[in-house]
Image 1 (cartoon, rainbow, N blue to C red):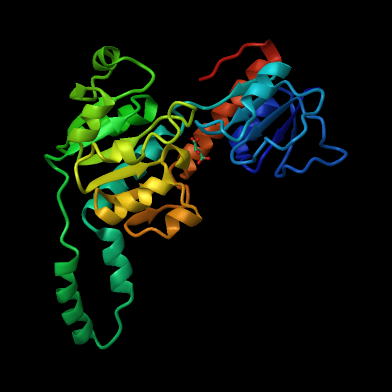
Image 2 (cartoon, rainbow, N blue to C red):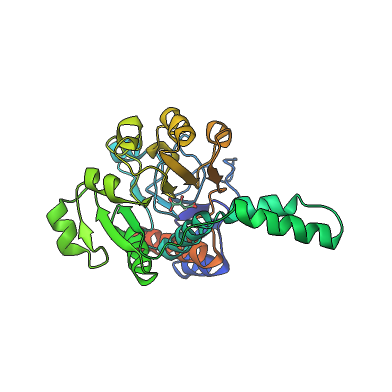
Length: 311
Ligand code: MLT
């Protein structure tokens, strides 16, 4: 019988999908012990597989998420192990947080809330301080502002579409397809353009591409110098897309007005005007269930039929 190991993401529905296939599941842990050391497949979310030994039965690893940076894909390819991800399954969750943080940062909401929580005193004193505070946190509306969307896949297209509905101008670029193809494919962006043009024209930039050799460090001193001063950059893709040594000075000089990142670390947390989020982009009940279900179905199909269906 095929056996699947699950990192802690086993919703009841996921378990049902797997057990319909007559598959055995190691629940609720990712500890390789004597009983659990040799699964046929692994379903995981955040667990880092780079330092793990593979058992000799392992045929597939499925990530309940879009990025596969926690899986040694080259090693899997060499050893004939199929790697699945769950494209689109968490796109709505990420889109909602992108738009939430875009609006909240534009209205200085994070700083305003943090400041308000520090107020003390009697009600009338607090009211006076609140009135004074209003002046510190005057924001900008997003209607009529330009949003640059880098990456026009499942998440980027949803963000672009809803930003249009919010009255933004939306321009787009995709590093993996030509400008002409992006123009033809995406009804969501008003104009597809080169990345240099996107940097020069955007009031807000949101990035939705995987971390690869070509995208790593794409936000750096050279590209910051092309941007509109005060641009807000939203990164719900991977921290490595940003050169952090260059981000610090760009924030200090005001070239970057705010950096909203779902990937905070020690360096980023020391910078002013960073809005750090604890990797919540895909963290909704709905998205976790969608991803877990898609991963479970992919692995079940593969183990039962040999089909490789990454959807
Ligand atoms: C993704 O790659 O889609 C996210 O990192 C998913 C997650 O939050 O685990």
